[in-house]
Amino acid sequence: MDNLRCNRLTCRRTLTDKAVVTTCSHIFCVDCANELFNASRLCPACETSLTEPDDVVVCSLHPSNDYKTSVLSGLNPTIILEICSRALSFWQYQIHQEHTFQQALYRNVSEKNAQLEKRLENVIREANGEISLLTNKLTDLERDLEAERRKSATFQDSLKESEKEYHKLKAQYDKLKRKALLGGAVGGKDGAMSLGNQALSIQDRQDDSARLKQGMAFGVGIGGAGGVVDVGAVVGNMEAAGVSGLSPLPTPLISYQLNASHVPYGRSSGHQ
Image 1 (cartoon, rainbow, N blue to C red):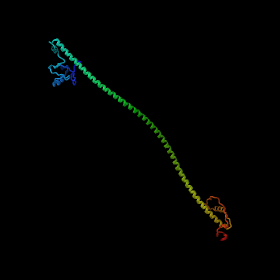
Image 2: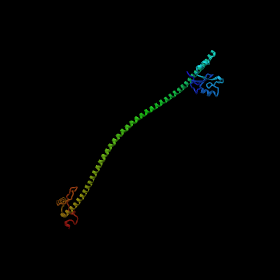
Image 3: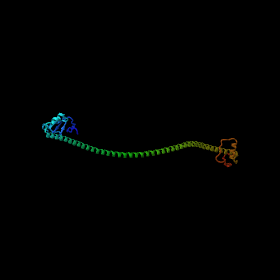
Image 4: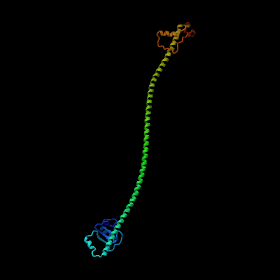
């Protein structure tokens, strides 16, 4: 160590030109000495009482050659050696104090470093735990996402199948609907024709019955009481004569023989 430092812990300034030394082997910068020793004569480093005038002196750390020549000149060598021994002891004490101070600083820094390392280890452990939890959650989420994708694909396939079935059923429904509409129109037309035919058949039967009665009456008037009237012959004669509009009867015509006894009174030729 080439230069000493101010022994005030709050200062620790490097001493280069002048300094204030004490008999208790401490050294201070001029500014700190003026501040500390004006209030009291106690050493701020060890609190030793400094009451003597030479207990606190200002020295030059870089004396001139003249000062070096004259400061010890004329002194007994024993005194010179004693002075040098005390000066060397002062320097050795300052080095020891600086080394102790540096060790204290190093110990303090090491303790802080150990605490910080422990905190860092705890932070790293917690971070690793969080990372592990997040990794597990991410794995679970990826698994769930894959399951949801499979479900979505299954639902899409089901939806496509349902759409196919829907279109198929709709086509069948439209086909049956058209068929029903066409069948209803044809059925309605056939029903109307059937009803018209039935009405015409009934009307023809009524007309045939009326003509039959007329033919019977006509035959009685011609044949007399004992005559026999052939209804089929009468109808044939009517058709030969040009009488139209007769529909064929549903059953074959039967020749009826009318006796005079079956003719009502007043209708036969014998009872006119």
